[in-house]
Image 1 (tube, rainbow, N blue to C red):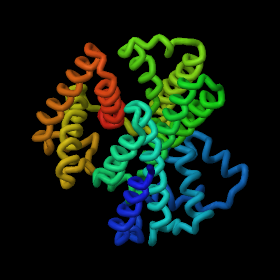
Image 2: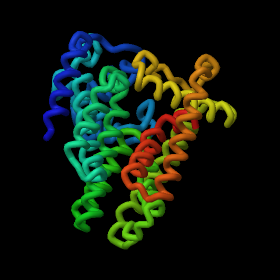
Image 3: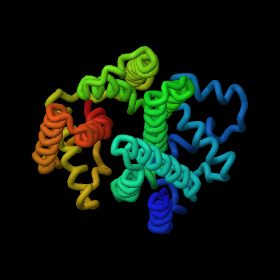
Image 4: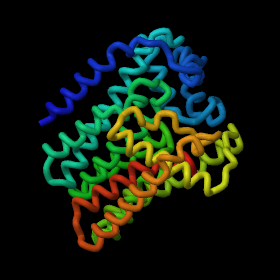
Length: 327
């Protein structure tokens, strides 16, 4: 059943093998890894430092702990002359995401085998080169994997009404937030899907006490991160709404084309400077795909086509991080 994903992992490791031992790519890697918090031996004060906002350039404590584990548990080179250990952990997190995605798709499509094959194609696609090979992308790898595991546990909680799955869903969601705040609004998908599917079970007590606290936590953490990046480490970009919308649509257009032609993968997307003006040729494609996806979502809701509806909600969920980058 899981053989396609295992073969996919072997294929990726083989293809990327020539670059696994390469040094850190840029200053981002060294600024996050070659620091005292990662070099130091473990003690309570170090743990306190990881969970103290402002003690580091940003506040993603689980990511920092994973770097520490790379160095002290797996022999990673903190100076980055050989970054294979850091890259292999990225591979592990992305593979975990693929497994979780297969379980989610298998549930919604009522066929785990199809879910595994779809997840395998997602896993091996070259659009994930940055996630796999860039040590600084660890926070994205972890947030995605832990967020998807949270969804898997929520589905189990919803189907079985067992409390342990509800607890695990909340637990992994919090871990995802502590890796990166990308999926802060993930719980909002639950009532939205429920309303679209006219499924009142979502609003029963057993279900509400899972997704509602998660939503409150997610919103609170999003506000916290917003305050952190304006008060503690000011990294704001002052651009008008039109620029942000154009940027989101342009990035989407380039990503869609990159799915077909890997050389267009949007690995250089930036939310500042003249990136948008240099890539405006991708704007029409992004707008067209966005409009078509919105139309298919509305059609699926009206016709109650479950598989199509879940696919469209999946698109909106995966697109949120791209859009958030420009907003």
